[in-house]
Every structure is written in structure tokens, then in C-alpha cells.
Length: 348
Ligand SMILES: [Zn+2]
Image 1 (cartoon, rainbow, N blue to C red):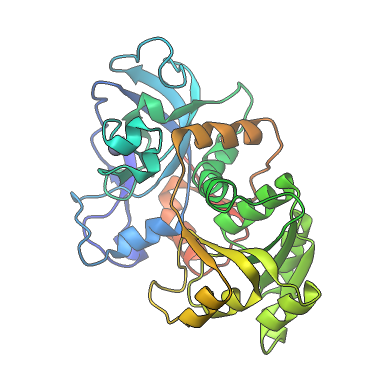
Image 2 (image 1 turned 45 degrees about the vertical axis):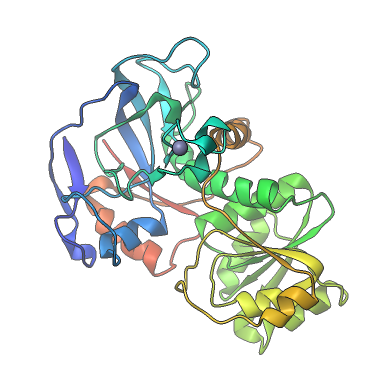
């Protein structure tokens, strides 16, 4: 098969479009002929590598993908999994739980003790074929766009688990989303509006803020024009503070904590500005704040949120599509925050 792989960690130049053996599905797995893959910042982090990351090189990036099932090793018994068969059009859930630890058995597979993420430690979707467990597949209707499906899978399940399950976001609450363009943030705007919350978005580019408005954001704050945007958020809530903050930047945690009302919740699923920063603990206890982290979702939540995507209740924000062989340019666009919404790869 054709794939984009890397043989050593490094810059975009290590990505190579080349031939690679087509994977063989193991028991319980399906072989998918991919038509679309979607990018996530994690792809670039894996390509660059970090201390302790152990990959079997060459590695293939990509957590998100959609395509057609061309082979199944051994189908699941009736009633298990989401009932897929050869010929079905499917989208992949990249959250690879072991299925047998105490957390997986309780249906909390994103807490799996032996957790893997497709494209992170196992070869992913920047390829013509990928083999994944049948349990990880969600069946798409006949005319649903592969690119939209691939774009939705990781970010919607991540934002859904964070806002709905961890954050318990309620109708009529106010949520602040820090950052306007990323995939999880655009999904968060839409999910918060779907729930009925008021949404404030802080961003640094007027164009991206307007785009955030077009997908539902109620109040826009341009931080390039502010000396202290947390104050503007506070004023926008009539000095009450917001109920929930979505902060996947990290370095902005102190400003985010300042915007919260007493008893407010800060939700985080990542740290686009790096993993280490300082916070002042006095804000956390004196204001009764909760900091709630999570990653991905359970299989049940994945189905729940993908049903909303398929029914058009949540509309993936699409940025730009590149041919598979131009994955390096696509990653550069993502890494430099030039995108608004999801970048996808077209796999012919
Ligand atoms: Zn497990």
C-alpha cells in the first residue's frame, strides 16, 4: 500500500510517501480501505518525538480515518460492537482500550490500564489501509462524507467527554473557550451551543473570531487588543465570572482561573503551548475551583456524539484538504495554527 511514514523523529522533512506492507487484520479486527484521514496536533508531537516515546519505526501518523471495510478476521458475536460487516462505510474511533481491564469492563475504556491511541504508539491512518478492532468502528450512512466523518471522530468525542461527562455543562451556564481555531475548540463551541450554554471565545485573530461566531459563539474577545483578557471576560459576565472554562493552551491557566466564578470548573484535554506552567494555588481553594482533565471518551460516548454528527446536529468545521502525499504541508499548516477547524488528507 501507499503510506506516509517516518523512519526517524524530526521536522516535516522526515515524512516520506512510499510503499509499505498492507497490515493484516488480527482476530477481532477489520481491514479498512481508507479514503480520508484527519490531522491532530498529536500527529506532529509524535513525529517530533518526546523522551520515553517508544515506537516501532517506521511509524505511520494518524488517529482519525474513514473508509470502507474490505476484510474482517473474525466477526464479533451478535449484539457486540456496533454491528459492522465487509463493505460497510465506517469511521474509526482511535481510542484503543484493551477490553479486559477493570476500567474497560466498566465501560470506561478511556481509563484503560493498557491504553493506546491509534497513530500514537501503533501505526495510524496516513495510509491506504489500516487494521483496527471491529469495536472501534462506527457505521456511516451511504452518502455521509468520509472527510467530515474523519474530521469529527477524535475532536467531538474528546470535547463531548470533557464538556458533558467531566464538566457536566448545563443549559444556561456560561462557558469560556480559550482559543478560536483548533479542532477541539471548534467542536466545544458547537457542543456547548447544542447543550444550550452561552459561549464566550477568546482568540487572537479577528478572522478566526468571526468564524467562531459563525459556528455559534455568542461573545468574542480579541486578546490581541487587550492588556488582560480575563478582565474582559469578567466584565462580559457582569462581574459574575463564567461557570466553565475550556483551556487546552496551558500557559493561559492563570487567566482562565481568574475568569471563573466561585465553584467553577476548568476543563482541559491538552496544552498547545507546552506542558509546564505555574499556577497560584490560592485561586483553586479560595474560589472552590475544580480542574478536570480528560482524554478521548468511552465507546458509548463516541457512539452518542457520532449519532449527533450523522444527524447533522453537530457539523464538523472543515478547514482544508490535502492529497495524502502532501501530509508534510498539511502538518505545517496545523502546527502554525493557520487552520480554522479540521485539516484532512484525501486518500485515493
Ligand atoms: Zn482496558
